[in-house]
Length: 398
Length: 137
Image (cartoon, rainbow over all chains, first blue to last red; front, side, top):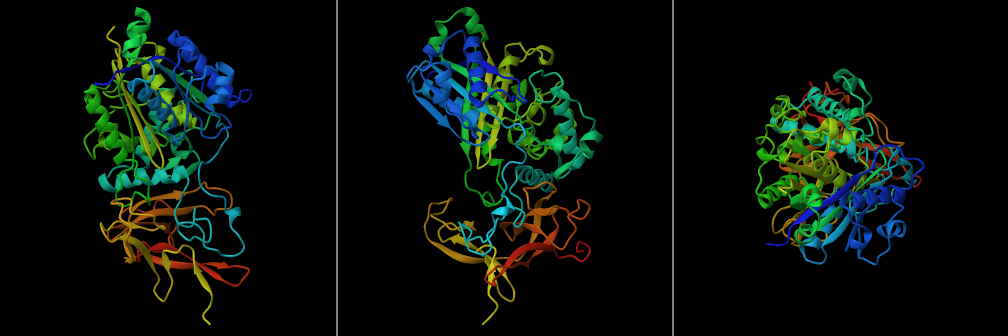
């Protein structure tokens, strides 16, 4: 059995608008916060994995502000799973015995970014010339379906409804209502506004059935984690050991080929595979989870991931949600942070920010939004393309 | 000389009755619409062009009301199951209204003119239209 790994320190900046800070400022704030929380310094770190999609930045630029010690830097990129990929990279280095301490950082400046993906029509030329892998003569977004994220994930939601029924506009709006309600207890969330169901349904429609409050919020933010090996943790203070959070599973998957997966991204199979592997490695089942932070980039996505993470029976996500299970006082609280819809989604930060939320809960330090006696939690992110990261975290027995 | 026409994508085959074509792996039968280096399912490198059924069933849809600049909205995007092969396309000749669209809707391939370029070539796009008169506009 390879050496285990623990979260020793972790920090998340306030998510929202940070007009006076650049990407490196936010990354440095998260890094210095995580190091202080861990009670160590850059001199202890043996590896740095850094995620930032939209730049301009790199792990080396971060080092130039927080400490240049000559350690290896991995600049990682995996769409919305970038943060989880940075964390996984550090965990792999520790499990491989390359080092006892590593730092994972995810950061993004996204406030005011608008719609992600999708091509601008102005790029069309005035002569039809075949181009690219489809021999296309013009941009396909809007001509052969949609390429923007709200539309892609809307189809993922309506497909679930087609397979299992009962997933209507009202249901998706209610999922969003839950996450916005949860956000009112999270001072670091971009938006802490409770919406009524009618407000959500009557807001601007982006891509049916996703209205604006049902879409993830573009914002600025960063999160960083210090990871430590079993052996090194045992030499630290009792207080550090008590606050350390056990990483019981760290799994990253991509799409296995299935019919249709290159036509509409299949976010289901790779999530199910990641969850299956994570539960096996951790020796923990979905019923053991005290809370889950999953990738609700859109309200339509949250529904399908109840099923993919096996929080409910196959095909049973609608009834599971309607039972109240995923509200913070339910059997399996989901996205008590407010989720991507209200906490916000600074893309590369998200896969560490969700680990911060669960770690803070397991440490019993979540303040007003504390889930009583939380001992086990799961985090999940999806990067379209696709990449899925799942981490299972446990409270320290120390 | 026939009118110069060009399809929006090379997997749309023009003719009296246009159809869509896929690259089918001769080894495992996996189908792809793009130019291939090898098969994503079995890694085979031998492909043949196969004709895709022109009728199918809507498995998923959305109505896009917010898109990149220059893209006319609203439009309905759908994922259509054409006898076991999944195809992406817009739903056309039907109002992009949630009251009018539903998964399970039976649709068929249709084409339309996208206009003529500076060389006089007409581009042809494709979409899916409802088969049933009651779904049709």
